[in-house]
Length: 335
View 1 (tube, helix red, strand yellow):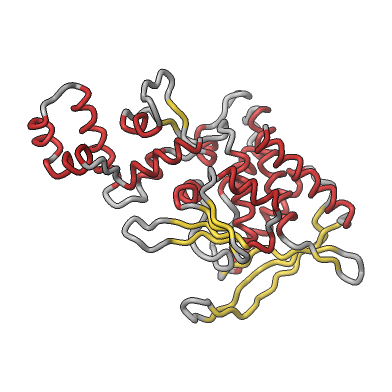
View 2 (view 1 turned 90 degrees about the vertical axis):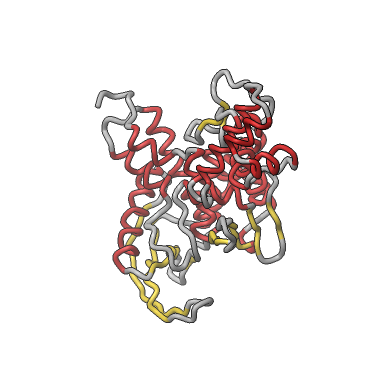
């Protein structure tokens, strides 16, 4: 592939389509199609009797007379309002709901201003958070981040990414369901971070693949380095990097029930450190197996994780990385 022409297969790792969100809702595509058809018929000047016959009298009454909006349409509308989904060129819809009705909503991708902030949010989730199902008919999602790792700037970042749809208390920062859906569609796994079998989040895997591909454009490689470097900066911001008595620093990668996943996670983490061009290296890794009891089910199993030891790491360097990340975040949320 000639330089400058990006692989669509690779770019798919950076993309979330409206239809990806629709699939999470029970009969989501059916409701979206019927809702759009109803308003298309209305725009055409069809009679109420004709609309009732085509769409169904019950749906026409609920959606037209009562003004009810199907949950799946609400999700697409809110994600457009926040800015995750864009507007098609030449869109004529008067507001976000109208543009969803007219199918004028475009996918979320690497060109969106929330792409890099979402990457930071998912780095927080990987180290200090979990994505849960609310358990209702449409399986609403909630992202929960541990408050103890959050300072005022990180809360501002989460609030910006979520369009203000967050709740904060002394234990957790909870993110609204619709934004959590974007995370899931972008590859974030459901469940506790301590049992996930995803090697690393999809966007950093995609970035790594792009950086390995000699046909990737320089522009896309620059973006991918930002993705990798930002993700690691956040990892060290929220994940404790401990110093031993010998002045060596180490961190523990999120564990897995599968030792093979834990090993692959370390291998990719090592690549990310190289790609990030941060001024430290991986000294050695120490696989460990820890007996674990699942807090909900009571199931007992070994949790396999990796202690990663770093060369050239210091408190001074950690402070520089924190300062760099603060500057990146302020640039994202303040423009």
